[in-house]
Image 1 (cartoon, rainbow, N blue to C red):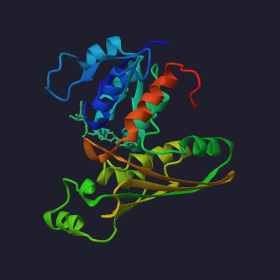
Image 2: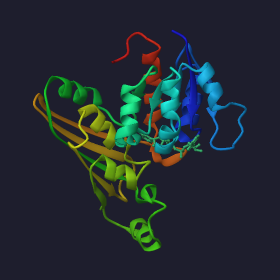
Image 3: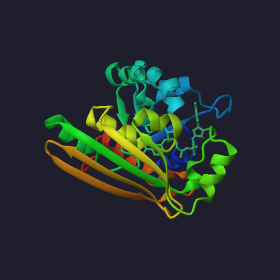
Length: 258
Ligand SMILES: NC(=O)c1ccc[n+]([C@@H]2O[C@H](COP(=O)([O-])OP(=O)(O)OC[C@H]3O[C@@H](n4cnc5c(N)ncnc54)[C@H](O)[C@@H]3O)[C@@H](O)[C@H]2O)c1
């Protein structure tokens, strides 16, 4: 099935998705354009995206999901979200997941095992999910940190736990780096069952996520180490490929895992 896609976000993830689509990695799926950030003119507007695209892919940040997401689905277009942390906002979550007529999909992004956790949640109950994420210190510096804090994190020679908490705590403090925590909550169908720890680790040449999900149908343990995106050390090189895989599934490609 042919599918026309518009992208919100032309950073590390968005530009790589565009490259993959242009290179013919997903036959039948064509890119209509990028929705510009603010006033940056690209000759393509959000309104045009709603006119021509079957699917609008958000790869811009949690703010962009709130700004554009409800309008995408109310226009009857499908929305594919990478910044899943935006769903920590219960009102926005309800709008995106329950209203229509467009549908909201979430990328598996940097993580694996979400399908099995969702299946366990559907067929049983989720007792507890823990996730420990490790990233290079420089990738975790945030605008709200004061100079001393930044200096301490950058100079650390051993792993330092920066934050421990639930999806909303994590996304508020580290909005670009903790979307996987919210993804686990969506998979579990429970925003209170996930406990995350974020660690700045000078030895973490690759970002890692260690997930343990204890469920009534068994225990699932997933350990993922991700190559960083060459364009953004805070982002994972796997994510654009996960998005393109999702688009292929939406286009009814045969042989995909669903
Ligand atoms: N689900 C996952 O596993 C996962 C993993 C990594 C990143 N992410 C999400 O993907 C997002 C994008 O990652 P990236 O590495 O490409 O970031 P990036 O900083 O390289 O690029 C973000 C792009 O979005 C644009 N942008 C920001 N706000 C916008 C808006 N309101 N309208 C239009 N464009 C806007 C920026 O100008 C920039 O081009 C991250 O912010 C994060 O929330 C999710």
